[in-house]
Image (tube, rainbow, N blue to C red):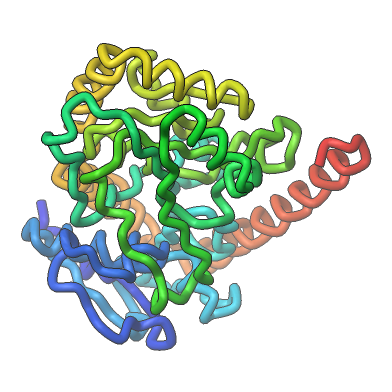
Length: 353
């Protein structure tokens, strides 16, 4: 099938080109801690290592299939219009759609119900992940959070949280970053090391009526759950759509909606080693579907069966038809922005945010 493909490019504009490049997607490289490279560069490296023909470029090609992260497209200030022989695929991540992209890749399966011409592909798991060390056996002591400060509930940043854990005989060891979306120079890249971790906690908010929870974090991925499965540790997670879609069994993770429920879940895990063992065994089974090799196959399928036909349909349209398509995308983009603003105003007027 690959011999029939047009040129396929992963586009990172020169202004966002990294100073150093990882040798492989399995390397614990700091840059994989931000979306631009976690998506664009890592996907390129995975596909290239799998023998799939693609290129990484800093200049926008005139024709072919071009994939770029939404933040990379900031360089074009929403003015980049695909030419008559170019299919632009925006890797949307958590950002707003790109007005002129013919296709979008999203990281939450439920988002495809709301965004036209969007396709779900799971976020890559943590590169270079180190599993929990077997020598820890039944020990349950160290609880961790790996992520950005914006993605941790306020209550879990307060000193009283650590005090509550200490009262349970537990220790809190978060690895929190506060870098901006384009800067990884000072990023703490220990997100990969679960060797001394016994469970993870990942709750963005306990406030059920916040604007984000109104959409149930519809743009967020289930990556923290995937990493827990691969690392061999139980996960206690907030009420988010991405996690709930993946929940086939109560053993997949423990869901909590309040701080008291979180404390209860930790007590339960501490007192029930058989539950912890069952969750870890279940996680090993679930992890088979989200390994890098499995996700690479999904990317190949998407490019060969979704992107390729879309590219030829685009190339075969008349100039007038192409301009109409781009115009419809632009109008839809601004229509969604207006709708989002009205939703926020309505929620605010009802004291829901």
